[in-house]
Image (tube, rainbow, N blue to C red; front, side, top):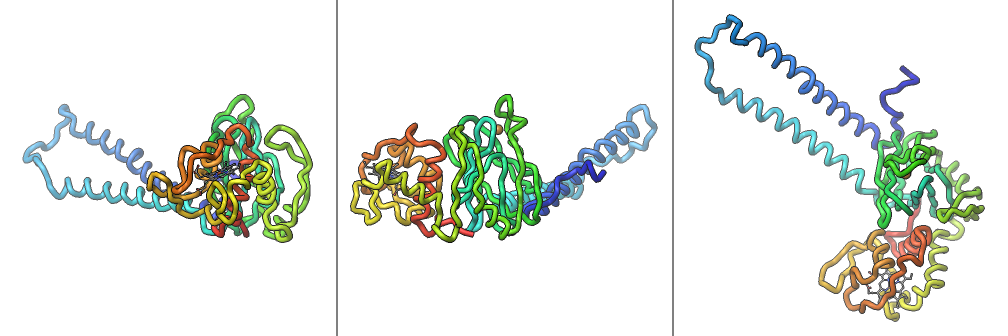
Length: 333
Ligand SMILES: [Cu+2]
């Protein structure tokens, strides 16, 4: 049995609680699906009209009985519901400070980029004991990022960001899968997650390596020590920000045609139609690709769309830059 485990290893903080809930669900299903039918079968045979049985004084109703079989299942299903909802909310709500890693899915490989610029293909290195948030998008079709040992799985969808977070609890190598059928080589779209101590992770971050970039070209990525230069992914984004002409309209002092982006990320933004919206990754993405969709209060709809002019990779860098302008956005560990 040791080479054929029923469950993957439990290697994240979510694994234990999820397995407990899963176990309870299986147990309840066994009771209701595995035991009740046999009782029904027995009673059908026992009281079939061909059988001799005492049928005098048959009961016509019983309030206590009705209440029992209503209230007990009610408590069970509501319990399972709130338990599951509680876990779900935990999994959807990353802690304040997380290590942010950008993931791009494409047919048929995973590409990840760490804050210091380090990139990798079909692998994800993460430190143990640190909350990690993945900011994911796809360049083509729907993929799904699945790490069974962490009990996390999230669709990766073209045209938007989806996020998920986890905290690894033990060092080791774990399977990484694409869990959404995405074409002929779907089954090859996977690799491994390597959970390592924080110091090993930092050492790994500082080693340059050759990777395939999301645009299909390959190259050696230069990396920077995290502490030395701030956030290099954001630095590259900052260069893009001036090269693409964003900086001409978005000045930090707010004197440009567009609003200053300082302090934008993670805060509520007032829109021209009177509503407010949380400025998260998807809002930033939409503001760049489809600026007319949500107009900032007090500004005119004059920003050109950058749809088709920036790659997913560049979009991630622009967003990392805009986030670095805000306290809530500066990623750290
Ligand atoms: Cu896929």
